[in-house]
Length: 155
Image (tube, rainbow, N blue to C red; front, side, top):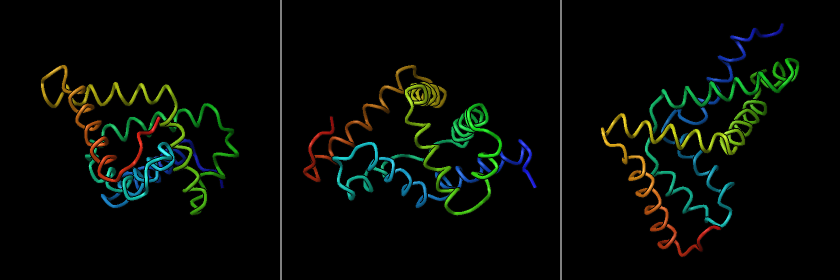
């Protein structure tokens, strides 16, 4: 039996949410995997330590990004393939997670997440430049961590 559009969306949402924010440990594991893929010169222990520094984001941001991901899947992937991808198997749930990471790495989403995080910081700080301060803080943490583990700067 085929899943409805609403059922597909719910499955995608729950799989991605569980994978990336279901618990602090799972979220940190997913972030470390992301860092290892996107920054290949960073040692595994440094990626894990960096993941521990990243604060948990508000569920509204996760919901927004997962919703945009699902919308893009529905626009580009045929229904038959979506049905297969959302069959609930461990392999296909992992594939959804990987496709989500690739989606988040796209130029459009990198810009979108930066804008969303800047807006989030403004709303919660009352200062327009808070997003820049948060970004600079995280850059400093990454640089300190890199120096601590003796890694070279990733170009």
